[in-house]
Amino acid sequence: MTGALKSALTLAVLAALVLVAAVWGWAALTEPLPKEEPVAICEPTDVAAGGEVRRDQVVVSVFNGSKRAGLAGSTLAELAERGFVEGDVGDAPLPAATTQIWSSEPTNPAVLLVQQQFKKAKIVPGDAIGAGIVVVVGEKFKTLRKKQVESVLAEADATYCRATGSE
Image (cartoon, rainbow, N blue to C red; front, side, top):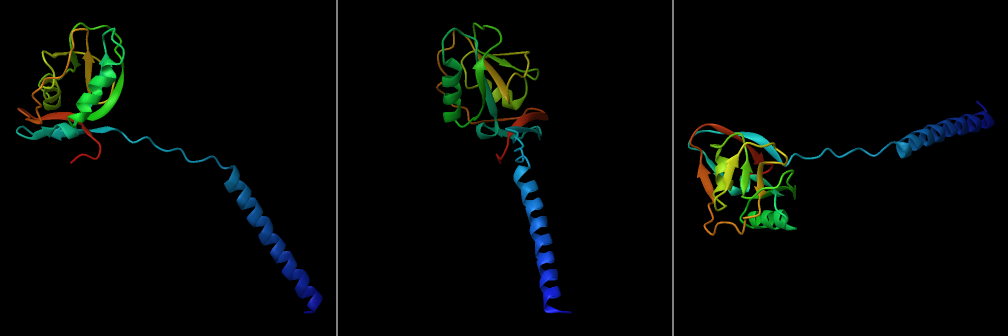
């Protein structure tokens, strides 16, 4: 093989490699960025009768059923200071006079733990309009109960939405 033929063959191979690299680079450059999968704030967890449910395991969403601006946000901030995990915040779909906890399971330990943070909160059937335990604060709501309940024991087997990453 002559020197000229070797040079031509080498240049042809190098040109092919540059072309392949250019095509691969262009494909990588124009590919859409991967979408991040949202991480669930809580996951359904079973608790056996006698099992403990703590504040740092419970996600609470608070909705404003009053005419006072910012009531849901400030209430959720107080609950977070007590150790609850923050869920959603916003306006309730319907006005409320009193504090309500929307749940179809009035004996659920997570529901009872949240209820014990409020004075005269009633558990009523309602839609899950937010993550975790849904609280609607109404016109008569003033402040959380001074006594801070840290945990409750499940009276029967139950399932609640446990905060992701809590132990």
